[in-house]
Image (cartoon, rainbow, N blue to C red; front, side, top):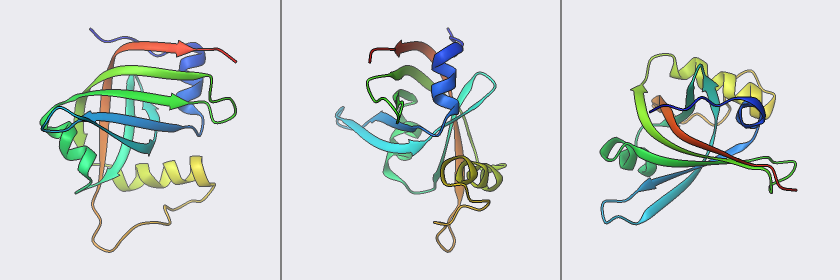
Length: 134
């Protein structure tokens, strides 16, 4: 069952904070990757490039854990148990440019590689926990 992300937890996700995506390798070992994060309605969104290792893990096993640290106080963080709800290339180029504006203050994503295909993953949160210590 989906859980809404509200209040301070949503503020942390909507700010320019880094998200660690924990996916599951074929052998069951966790794999982690740092990504930019955003919200789209009730979904947590990340943008990545085709071919990245962690995204192949998520396509195989849609379950993830997300850890979003408040960069101003890393003892304040949000953890989310989530499932991949959507995997799309539609709008991914515009989305990564919006993320570049949020995280870098630049209108266009500056790290694009020749031939790179961007992808948006939308995750449905199942359990959300805010650690407000600090």
